[in-house]
Image (cartoon, each protein chain N blue to C red):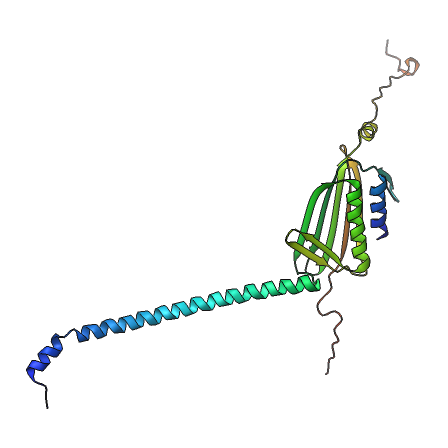
Amino acid sequence: MRYLNALAEGFEKGTLQFRDQEGEIVLEPNGMIRFGISAEQKSERCDLTLKLSWKQSRADAEQDSGPLTITGLPRETRKAEPE
Amino acid sequence: MSPSPEFEAVQSASPRDEHEVDFDELVEKARKAELKALKKAEKEMQRANADTAEREARKVAEVEGAPKKGSKLQFEGELDRSEVAAYLEAIVRGLRSGSLQFRREEESLALTPAERVDVSVKASSRKGREGVRFELEWRAPSESEGKLAIVVD
């Protein structure tokens, strides 16, 4: 329930922060959210799945792709061409 | 005293024998038709009883909130952030109270979350979309749970 409460709060505020031993990811839900819910009662198990997705904000998308950088090697570090 | 030849002639000429044969056939046909109708009525009654039993079971399940075995309910839509938060809060309330009720048009599903629930969370950001997948799973309450069993050797 703690996780679901945090998720609800994150959607309310517009920032979701996830962290585990492998790293951290910060999501910023915005605009219309695609919300999918599936509740299922099987013979031995019950399952409740929530799928939420949204378009990344333009600024984030640009930041993710990152600027293109091309760096040429300095003249002095070039290998001497055979004479 | 034997009947007179004239009487015999009249008797054999009468359509009585033919009529009796027809009657037997009619009786047989009627009997078969009646049997068929009875079988049909019996089948219809069985079907009606099964429908009624199913309807009654569904009513009981709805009233008691008992989950139907092998039931599934799905929903997909576009919501704003506050609507998403409201749904998540409703799920939290259901988990706290021990009863999750889902309803969509005519369909409904009631789940009884167990004390112990397995949780799986996945957050992703790729190809211009961000998303979260949240999964809760628990063992369904068995019908024999909570019943006392006494075994005598």
